[in-house]
Image (tube, rainbow, N blue to C red; front, side, top):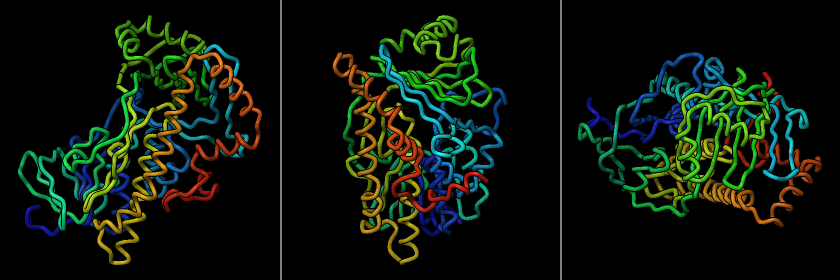
Length: 413
């Protein structure tokens, strides 16, 4: 039977990255017939000593999702790097805040994970499921929504239909554009440089973030003593930094980090990308749902992007599982409005908070500078308030989809 004559899939996911693949795994486990379209099959092998420049800071709630999807052990076999502490400070001030997992009786605050590690583990899980069809390389040339949503593939003019199409194809989502869904937001006057560096001193599983007028600099610990950096700065400064040779870049990075880990002694390949804030005008249409970066984009200063995307995916998984059990249409607006109500407000609140932090800490007005340094010091001594901040950042508080719920003991096993 060809794809043109087979019965419609229950779910067609456009985009097999981390968020799209996670949704595919959850829905396959729920018994749905799933098809995933992906432009590029993930890398399956790389040198053991090589660290991908694209990493994510995964919360404990995200860790539980990945455990429940059956991929966390595979990821740990490749590489995940826990961090137990975090230090945040402001340029030109004495305000600092120190977070420690020990303060709340937890083994860690989260994990730094290469994006390719997570994607490969999820992809392999999809390959193992008999009710999942993977099509790659695949690019959509046309889409029709309505009673029976369908897409046409660019290379073969093949049509694939499903009860629901999910756009998980990134912040420049082709599917969102085909659906005529606009976004609210703006470009930040910042670019982010990412790379893996080797500092003079061991990081002791501590993440560091320094706020500067031009943008924040984050040093994220890798298990072998290296760090992944995310250096957000003006586009002009980013261009200057990217043009430097490795030795001079390391010298300027040492200065920008205030030598928090001593001299930066080595650096791998560098990448750079522009930053922006965006939120889709709607997350749903009849027969269509947007998740992850297709629905929203945010500043990376808190590293919450992939965590938000996975919460989208697992919330949609709950909604679709409930609809399937109740015999309701997966692509109907009555079903999909539950998803949008649950996620759009929460995402907008996070986008607004990160935008506020970015603007507050990028402002060099003296009263604001004094206020934020005082605020950092007060929060650092606040006890209960700081503990609540840590628990919320780790995903231990608030409403969570079913696959993100857990007991503390389950994560210690």
